[in-house]
Length: 329
Image (cartoon, rainbow, N blue to C red; front, side, top):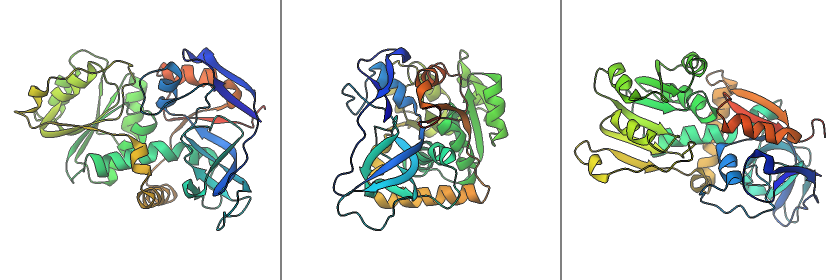
């Protein structure tokens, strides 16, 4: 089968499109013929060799979320048939034409659900929903600031925050086009979080009070700006550091304002099968009812993974970036 691997960390050019041996499903596993694999910024971080919670031993195949069809069943697997359209969260191995995954991580798709849309929904939709409900514990009427608001997680977070009762949603994005996109999805206002002292604009938009919740994705110096934009008792949910820079925060500054910084890592939540299934069910219902619109930015063949990484790493995308392993193979 065709796959994309890296043998050393570095820039997008370290990705190699090549032939590898297709996996065989073991006991309790299913083999999925992958029709679409969703990209995440974590793919960029692992390829670059950034600090990451899970190892990426070379030669390594990226790809944490896939949509496709069941191609074969391992020993002892029942309750699912070959040919079933599914979603799965392998954690890695998705930049390929096939992947073997535990059947417990497989989610059947409704009839006619597009695999590209499904791949765009999985990790980013789950992240946005669980961040807002479980990590931030959003309450009706609260004000939410969403960084990277035109991206995969951000585009879902805007729509879901509205459905969950947010009082005001402020989108933070780096270009006028991305800010306009965020507002078209339901953000009430937007700011340029690459501008100096952008927190002052957030405070102006909230009549000086600041926001109750920040979804932080950039890291580095941006985190302290985000803290400046928060209201008393505000919660900052730290998803990652797309800037590649670590944040330095003086804990003392959290005391008088009663601010909280809460770390978030989706894999820890995915271990809860009940939460996974109920949240995916909720998201699919929102999509089919027209309450949430899936944002797909770029759809590229797997053979163009290098270009896809360049686009994602340089913030040249809106919505989800999806790779298709069988197109042009």
